[in-house]
Image 1 (spheres, rainbow, N blue to C red):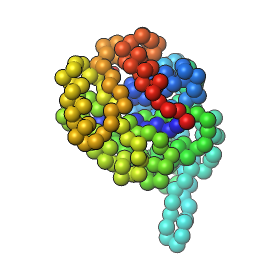
Image 2: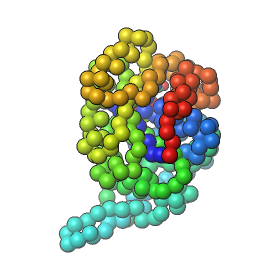
Image 3: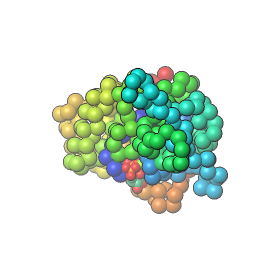
Length: 256
Ligand SMILES: Nc1ncnc2c1ncn2[C@@H]1O[C@H](COP(=O)(O)OP(=O)(O)OP(=O)(O)O)[C@@H](O)[C@H]1O
Ligand SMILES: [Mg+2]
């Protein structure tokens, strides 16, 4: 099962990706978390020890440029994805591994491509990788890393929304973009919902744009407290409202 999490800046993509991974992992699944953000912070939400040794930084060197036909070039990852995982991956608690790809180092030689291309190709390579593990991609606040052809591997895209207009509107745009990329299964995750009125507003908007809601997550002060302390909500308070809601949600997921 391959899951991508999208949404406007600050809506809770990383919190949700990390918590989802940990809950899935706790249930006995092998999980790979991919941080596609150039300012990576999934590591904290996953509960990786800040003192732990950082993995080797990915570099643009792992990409090569190939001439497809006369004058037509394409980029691709040079090494098998498993090797990338073994070299650059990091272990997190609960059977989760993390691969940070959002900020590849620019190498002097290599593919002559921008870091954007590297991230896009790596996401493609990761998603195309066949393995018995669940993959969760925390995207940056755009879908530029997704490209046509990636969609065939994404089983679910969740667009995270907060109960305010611009976020809802953005969720609609993400859903449209996902559809244009050919991702069929797009649903909303409502986050930071404080009361019935906010829930209702999200429900109405999503109904209007035909976007199913996968789960409604409450606003949870424990999440902001954990964030302030730089620890995973899973380790801060495993009975937090958001964790409980995520556990119920994961039960409904059809993992394959
Ligand atoms: N359910 C929640 N209740 C309360 N606070 C939350 C909740 N979910 C996320 N937050 C807080 O919202 C802020 C943004 O969350 P997060 O970093 O996960 O968002 P993001 O979408 O990944 O942001 P960015 O676009 O910058 O990557 C953080 O301070 C986080 O603690
Ligand atoms: Mg984030």
